Image 1 (cartoon, rainbow, N blue to C red):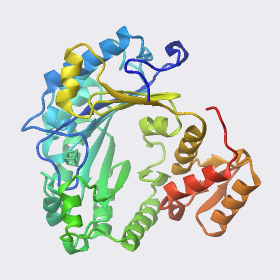
Image 2: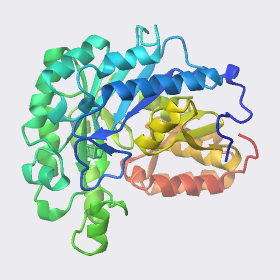
Image 3: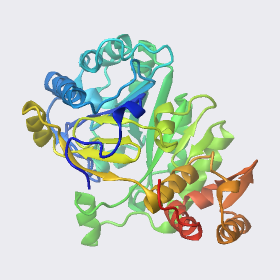
Image 4: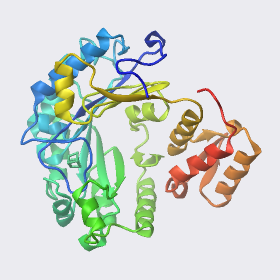
Length: 396
Ligand code: SF4
C-alpha cells in the first residue's frame, strides 16, 4: 500500500488525465439492496459538494498530483443520486473544475439522474451548463418491483424523466435496468426490456441483483426470508437481454452494456482500456498507472479532510506484475474488443482458449479472442484461468 499524498514512483509529468469521475453521494432514501457510498439527505447539498470537489482538486494540484488535460475528454458524475443536487449543480461543478476544462468540442459529460428528481428545470439547467449525456436509474417499469426495491419513482417516472430530458435537448440517454429479481415480485423482464427500448434511449446498462452482506436485502436473504434469482434464472435473463437488445439494433459492447452504434460510453471505454483517470469526491477511485488510489468512503469524513486541507485518500496500491496482467486480461475480456490472440504467449493459454471456443464461451473476431455472452457470465473465472495459464511477468 502507498503513502498518503503520493503517486509512489510515478512522475506526474509522464501522464495527462483526460477523464474525471465525480461522486455525488446524496440519496433521499437508501434502496433495499444498495451498498454504495451514500449519504441519506432530504435534499442534496450542491454548494458544499462543489466546494469540496474544487478544494480536493486544489489540494491535488498543490501536491502535483492532478495532471489534468487543459480540456477534458470525458467527465462522469455518478452517485448516489446526482439529480438530488438540483438545477445549479453542474454549473457549480464546471466552475470547480476550472476555466476551460469542459470546453473540449468532443466532450462527453454524463451525469446519473433518478426519475423522481430529474425535473424539467434540472434537465434544462444541466444542459445549459454543458452536460451532454444522462444516465437514468430506471431499473424497472413494474410498480410492485419499484416499491420492493425502495425506489422513489413509480412506473410512469421513467417516461416523464425521458420527456424532460428530451425537452431540455438531451439526445444521448442511457437507462439502467436491474435483473435477477426475486420471482415472487412477478416482474416480467421481457416487458421491461421492451418498454426501455420503446423510450428510444441510445444506451442500456444492466445490473444483476446481488445480496450484499451489509444491506437489508443481504440480511433478509441470510435469514431465509428472501430468495433472489438462482443461477439459472440469472443466466436466462442475461441471455434474453442479449438476444432481444441485439435484435433491436444495440451492440453488446461490454459485459453489462449495450449501445446503438456510435453511442458507446467513452468514459467507461477509458476505464476498460486502462487509460488514466482521476476520481473526485468520497469513495472515488483514481488510476495513474501503475498507481490506484481511493478516497475515504464516508461523505462526512471526506468533507472534514478536505476542509483541513489534506488529501481525502483512504489508501493506494501499485498494480504491477501478475496483478497488472490479470487486470489487463479481465478488462480486455469484458469488452467486445477482447484480447489479441498473438499475446497469449504460451501453449497452455492457447489450449485453454481453444477449449473455451469449443464450449461456445469465446469466439475469434479477426486476430482477437472475444468472450460470448455465455463466456461473459463466467468472466471472473475465465480471466483467472487465463492468467494462470500465461507466462508470469514480473514487471508491469
Ligand atoms: S438511488 Fe442508487 S445509490 Fe441511491 S440508494 Fe438507491 S441504489 Fe443506492
